[in-house]
Length: 272
Length: 264
Ligand SMILES: Nc1ncnc2c1ncn2[C@@H]1O[C@H](COP(=O)(O)OP(=O)(O)OP(=O)(O)O)[C@@H](O)[C@H]1O
Ligand SMILES: [Mg+2]
Image (cartoon, rainbow over all chains, first blue to last red; front, side, top):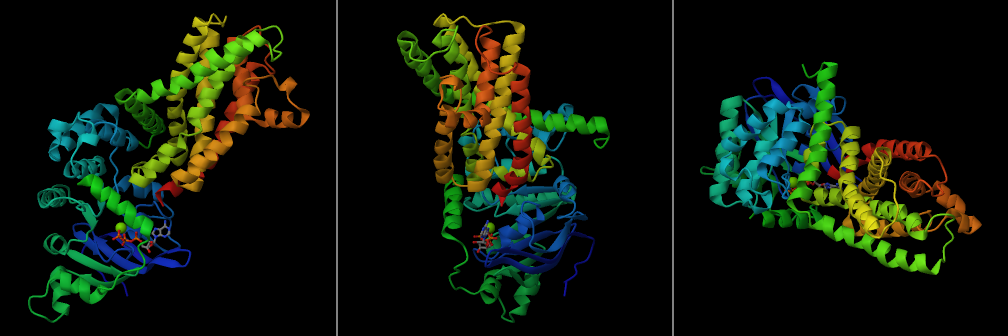
């Protein structure tokens, strides 16, 4: 059964599935995300969060099922999907060897923003993310929080309808984390951008997401607002962390390959 | 408006120009690589070239050995730089940067083609070094508008060809270790089974078919035809360039299918 949410769906997955050989990274995933919400995907390492986002951003073809994003089919209309979305990957998407402004200039060109508008748009985006003073500094000298904000500026430059953020706050100190979330919230208020975000910080998901999907071994095992999910446990004072433990267990997952863990940590270290 | 044909062409040109421009900005921020890259061709010309000119070990017809060698060394340095270009894509995969290009609405053919062309900026910098050195060594080279323009075109084509081949390898192997292994395995046969440092005529018969199937041969031959007008090039320059263009387009078509694997 597909749980329906109020309002028009901006992301609709139908039986979305992705296998890697024997591993089923995402299994029969069906859910809808509406145009005006911040939707959180939570789940243990290797649960399938990144794989889901890669399919929705057209980077990875599904091996079964399909989905629409901003009304376009991810398999049949990938070019249209790409024009409608912004993506901040779990790893890194800003180039360290050039400046913040140059990164945005390139992205503006890739999204076909005409030259005469591009400079103003890039400068506005840098200002918005509080990066105006470091616009002409090489990104290799940026702090982790600054890199993340630059990546968000990149992902927003073409004013996408849906923004996908894969662990945007990993490796950041609490102040930088709050700054990132403040931007996410402002964005939704100012432009009505729908946001799909993954995180391992349960307090963040609880505070900022309208709805949360708990994903475990490739399947959505719980879906609802943080308050609804906590209520299902039937314990007064339950936290989203308790929900996570209840649905996804504590056991150590074998899924997340060594290599992947190495990659994530290396990036996290770089962002710190 | 962007969907009108003119807007679409403008958009595509904009996409290509920022991809090439990004490479230029990187080199401008940190040109050390360009200087380091210049050492190898300089050694080949000055040491190898001078020694073999004196001992007359390689028969090159009417031209001196240095005249014969200069285009070969230029082609060789273009090859050596371009064939390792794919490692940048593997690093971008490891960092995650590659996804920025692949989630954008840049058509895959344009993305790969522009990245290939952007690799020729390094090749062109080598041309400046080799031509200056050759002039200092008093190698009589042709410097007309046509010959210099032709050399630029040949270098862009050759760089794009080998860097696209490199991106294909990168998309298939996806790790730096395997990529470096294959890159090293490939460069020496490409170099020695070509007319870069000796004429095909003196090769053993079994090697000649490989030399004629080797794209580097056509790059060397084009450069030789353009730079050393008296010299014995094998084919007309237009034919050499045509062969390079056809192979390049074929490789771009293949690479555009494989390149998205770097984001999976
Ligand atoms: N390219 C790939 N090839 C093979 N297996 C893969 C690939 N990408 C992901 N997997 C596997 O798919 C499963 C889901 O991985 P995924 O990266 O989606 O998890 P995740 O929920 O994002 O985890 P994390 O919280 O660690 O980021 C894991 O078992 C992972 O090893
Ligand atoms: Mg992940």
